[in-house]
Image (cartoon, rainbow, N blue to C red; front, side, top):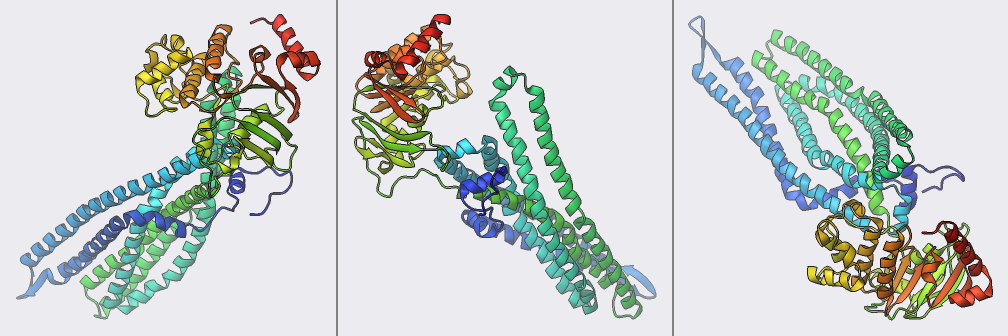
Length: 611
C-alpha cells in the first residue's frame, strides 16, 4: 500500500492497513467461499428447497389460468360452473400455499443452523488469531475496534453468506422461469419485458458501486463509536475522577453524529434504487396490459392467459424490488468482511524460528549484548547499546528515572518486542531461537498492575498450574506467606475477584499474582514496580513474599522505592537507555554518582512525606 503523506494523521483503517502491511481487499468472494465449505451440504439443501418453492409459486398462475378459461362451461346457452375442476384447483392452490409455508420454514431452519456454524467458526478463528498477535498490535489498535471485528462485523456476514445466496438464487430463478413462461404464452410479452433488463443492469451496477463505498464508511464510523464505548467502560473510574463525563459524552455524541451523517448520506445516495425498480415494475405491468388487451381484441389470447401473464410479470419484476435489500446487505456484509480479513491478514511481528530450541528448564543466566531498540523504527532509541550480564541466581535491581528504558528491558527479555540491534540471551541462547512458549515459561513477570480474570482466587492461581488441586494452590499461598491476607477475604480462596480483579485491593491482587508466579516456578523472575502503590503494611507482606519467591532463581527487580532494593546483589542504573552504573548499594553510594544522587533525592522525599 502507498505510504501516507509525512505528518498526515492516519485514520483508523489506515493504521490497520499499515499493521497488516497490505491495503483493504475490495474483492471478497474468493475468501468468503471457503468459509462455506463445512456447510455445503446444508447450503445444497437450501438450494433444493428454494427450487421447490419456486416450483410451488409457479403452479399458482397455471391454476388461475385454468380457473378462468375452464372454470365456466358454456352449455345450452348458459354458463355453468365446473365444480369438480374448481374444487381440484382450490385444493391445488391450498397445497401450493401450504408447501410454501412449510418449505420456507425448513429452509430458514437449515440456513440458520448453517449460519450459526459458519459464524461461530469464524469467531473462533478471529479470536484465535487475536490471541496470537504480538503485543505491539494491541499497543497501536483500539480494543473497541478488535471487539467490533469479532462481534458486529461477524454478525453482518450472516445475511451475506447464508441468507443472501438462496434469496438471490430464488430471485434469479423466478425471473428466469417467468421469462420462459412468458415466451411460451407470447414472445411479444417476453420481448417487451426484455427491454427493461439493460436499464436494470446499469442501475444495479451503479447501485453496487455506491453501496460498497457507502456502507464501508458506515461500518468504519460504527467501529469508531464502539471503540470509544469500550474505552469509556474500561476507563470509567478515571473519567469520573477527572470529572470528564460531559466532554467524553460530547465526543461520543460527535462520533454518533458522524455515523448518522454517513448512514443518512448513504441512504440518500442509494435510496433511488428501490423507487427506480418500482418504476420499472409499473412500466412493465403497463406494457403487458396494453399488449394483453390487444391480444384479447385480436383473439390471439384468452382471458386466462392474460391473467397468467400478469402473474408471471409480477414474478419477473417482483425480485427487482428485493434487489435493493439484497445489495444493501451485500454491501454491508462485504464491508465487514474486508475488515475481518484485514485483521486476519495482520501477522504477528514476533514469531518462532523454523527450528526453535527447546529449553524446558533454564538455569537463569541473562545477557543483554549491545542491545538497541526503538518502538518506532528510525526514531530515537529507547534502549541504546545496552550491555549487561546477569549470572544465574543473582538478584539484580534496575533503577533510573521514569521513561529511560527500564520496563522496556522487561518487554525485550520476555520477547513481547524484538531487539533491532544486538541480542538478548537466556542461558547463552539467543531468545529469538527459543519458542515463545518455552521462553515465557522460564521468565515470569509480576507487574505493578497485574491482570486478574473474572472468577475466584483459585481460578486465577490455577492459570499458572492448570493441573493443580485446590489444596496444592492453597499450600503455595501458605508457603509464600500470602494466605493470611487471602484467607481473610469474604469467601476465602473462593472469593470472586471481579473483572480485572476489581473486587480486591491493589495489595491483595499483587499477592495473588506473586502466588501465581510462585506456582509457575520460572527460572527468571522479573518484578516491575511490584511493590508500588501499596500501603506500608501490605508492602512488608509483599517484601516477605518476594524474598521467598526470589530464592533459588534469577530475580530482576525494577523499583522506584530504592529502600526495597538495598539488599540486591547488584544494582544497575539506567539512563537514556544505557547502563550508567553497576554495583551493590554500598559501593554505588560510596562512588557518589548517579545512584547516590537518586538515593539522596529518595531519602529527602521520604523524610518530607513518610509512609
